[in-house]
Amino acid sequence: MGFAEELRNQSAGDWDAAVNHPFVDQLLDGSLPDEDLSHYLVQDYQFCDAFTALLGQAVASAPSLPSRLVFAGVLGAFASDENTYFQDCFSELDVPETDRTTPALGQATRDFDALMRSALATRSYPDVLAVLLVAEWLYGDWAARAGNPDSWPAEPKHAEWIRLHNNPEYNAWVAWLRDEFDAVEPSSPQKRQRVAATFAEAVRLERAFFDAALVSAAIR
Image (cartoon, rainbow, N blue to C red; front, side, top):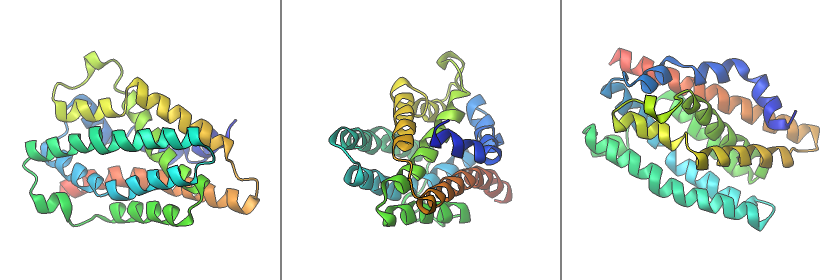
């Protein structure tokens, strides 16, 4: 068992709860209300700055040119395809400009942003990979639940978010991240424990972020 699989198993409770979350259920069957989707996307968009910086740090700290090029390619795709999805949905859902750029942040959003920036500040390749891997692998797992594209929801605002996390290129990227993470497993017990704690906290916050997406909608 690789380091990635070991850590995923240690966080199986939060991982499975996030992958099978009621928010995900509604997204996959197309029943997610616009108000809930809008709230979720506004909060999720606030991660773009820290996530882009994490990818940049991965480029800087990767041990070889081939690895750097993989991250550089993903960085370019993230800046185009995913950003375009956000902007298109914001326009369709009539999200005000202030909510796109300076919304009130939920606690889960603040905590996850802080975790990403903490990993960024370490300048440690394994720490950076731990956060990137959770964010990408867990999303790939819930998107895989959608099955064949023929069964995806009809609305592009739902289907496109699934497609961005369920396609051959994305799946190959996640598999590569897992292999890369396994290859740089820290040999020091202290560093290994720190990376494991970062991984577990990222999983916990992914679940909390989905929880907040529904709770916030319920109290508005």
